[in-house]
Amino acid sequence: MSAGPEVALELDCRGMLCPLPVIHLGRRIGEVAVGELLAVVATDVAARTDVPAWCRMRGQEYAGEDTAPDGSPRYLVRRTA
Image 1 (tube, rainbow, N blue to C red):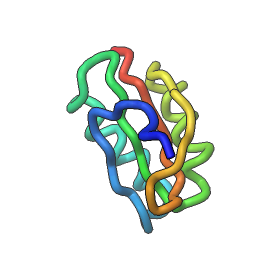
Image 2 (tube, one colour; image 1 turned 60 degrees about the horizontal axis):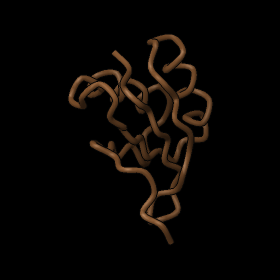
Image 3 (tube, rainbow, N blue to C red; image 1 turned 30 degrees about the vertical axis):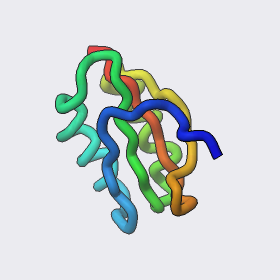
Image 4 (tube, rainbow, N blue to C red; image 1 turned 180 degrees about the horizontal axis):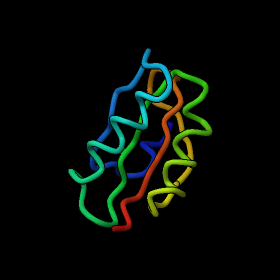
């Protein structure tokens, strides 16, 4: 299994329900440099639509989805501003 993209910060939002994963994303995006990736690991199925929608509303780049080592979905956000 490949290591995947280099992530500067990974947020563990397993077990959190909507809207908590995107609230944590919004609070912590400033901790990564412009151009770096932040990952949100979330088990709530709503995160699959919430994270890309948050990126559109906040002008950040949704960089896709991969999988955390435990099989949980991991959503990638590239800070653009």
